[in-house]
Amino acid sequence: MTRRIDMAFRRLVEVYQFFWMLESNAQQRLAWEDAAEARLARLRAEERAASQLQAMLIANPSGALGHAALDDEKALRKAGLL
Figure 1 (cartoon, rainbow, N blue to C red):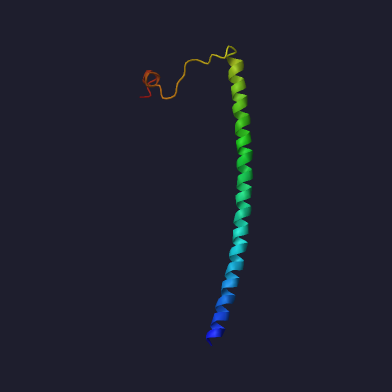
Figure 2: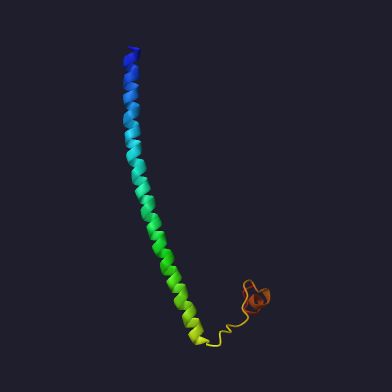
């Protein structure tokens, strides 16, 4: 009787492991697709940034784009943002 229960339990575990393997493979394929989409999005963003830089340089050919700084409190207060 115990042997029969052991065999049934082993069979149940094997079936569970098989379905777990199928699910794992499906999740891996989804991860690969996500990674491919992320690579494409990064390439598009880099192209967009390069074209924006080119447009800025065309608009201001001297290359002197001002004295802008991130989180410049004085400029933020002057603009009424603080």
